[in-house]
Amino acid sequence: MIQVMSDRPVCVIVGAGEGLGRSLAARFASGGCDIALVSRTRSGSEAALEHARAANDAVDVQFFAADATRPVSVEDAMAKVADRMGAIEVLIYNARGDFIRCDPLDMTYAQLEEVFQVEVMGAFAAARSVLPAMRAKGRGTIMFSSATAAFRGSATHPLYAIGKFGLRALAQCLAKAHAGDGVHVVHMRLDCDLDVPVMRRLYDDPATLADTDGVAETYWWVHLQPPSAWSNEVELRPFSETWTI
Image 1 (spheres, rainbow, N blue to C red):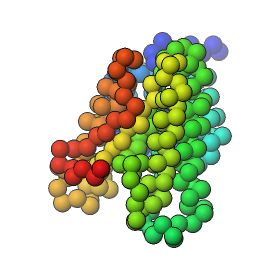
Image 2: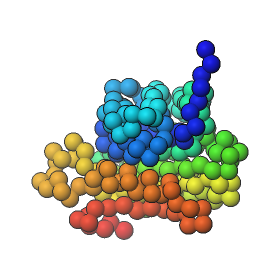
Image 3: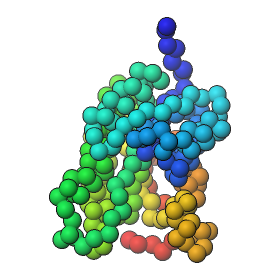
Image 4: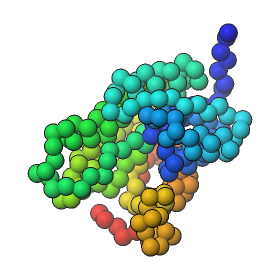
């Protein structure tokens, strides 16, 4: 049977859970993109699948399994997306390491290796998988979901900071190397706590949390930026957030 590709742009979201991943899937689907959701388990992406389809039932929404700690599995998933859905125009890397509290001297080698795998190696594997086709077409957007931890070390959460520092460096390197090829690479820095179920249970006033739909709207806006006015570093926070840098 011959598989017919649509002429819609394909957006891949790596790490599409019930929070920001769900909102990103819905926003890019409503913008007319076919959506490929990449996570370890389909159950973890079920909310994103449902919201993307509800946002636009005319687009194709598919799930692909991969583990961000295993770069080869990420590469395999990207290859399957391209084979089944067509060339990838937008990549959003939304996976992150665990937010573990510890003293810097208490970090283990295994923990350092794992955070590097998720934050840097997984992100690199995803980007390297899509960049050749983007360069050949002369266009494409790659966005890395990050945090203010990419700008400042931490006495209490060093693993998270180390991972995000590495992710920011990767984003800058790729942007400097490939902007001239027409590929827009962006480090999306969230200086906030997102409005997701676990954070609502921790906050007395959920209104101070960042609305994930609002955050996703900014990702969409960044994707639409003209090449003459690209951002590489984008910072987001709700009006109530105390600035940390």
